[in-house]
Each structure stands twice: as C-alpha cells, then as structure tokens.
Image (cartoon, rainbow, N blue to C red; front, top):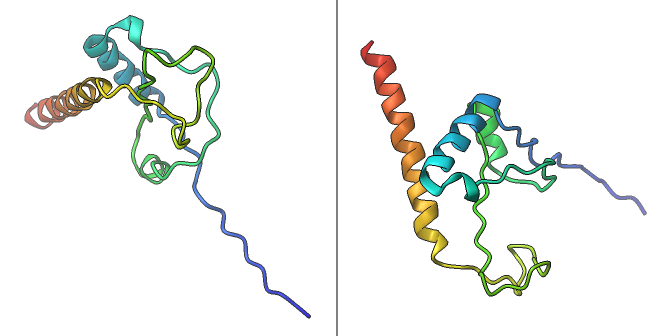
Length: 115
C-alpha cells in the first residue's frame, strides 16, 4: 500500500506596513477616539486571506472589537464560535472608520497627483 502526500503552504504572514499602521491608528484615534484604539502587544498567529493583499501593497490589518457590553469580562470567545455575542451598534463605528480611511487615502492620492 502507498500514498501520495502533498503539502499546501496556505497563507502568507500578514505583516503590517509601519507607515500604513500609523496612518490607520491616526484615523482611528480621530474617528473613534484614542480611548477606543488599542494596539495589540503581540502579533496574532491566525491565518487570514488579507495577507495576499499585504503581500502586494503596503497595508495594515485592523480588528474591530464588537463584544457586547453585557458579555462577562474574561468570557471572550473566538469570533467563529456559536457562543460569540456581538454588539451590532459597532457596525456604524466600523463603517465610519473604513469610510474615513478611504476618504483620507483618496485625498492623499489626489494631492500627490495634482502637485
């Protein structure tokens, strides 16, 4: 009996570009307030298809916390768990942040092309 085995390397590592991460942090501070921005002390090791984008363009990967305020502290579960409870009011905050990032980036690009 024999078997053929192949290994798929999966996703590349998501690595934030320092300038893009600083840009995103600045916009998040302005849109959400500095008390609502937290930079993770250590990198995450989860796989993410966004890594393919970050491999081709300078990028920063952001997480938007959406735990319900009723959720007991220390009872955090993975986003993909059936026990996860989300605060849907964060959807507006997330949309506002993404819109501000896009508008600021477009304004920056327009300023470079007209100069």
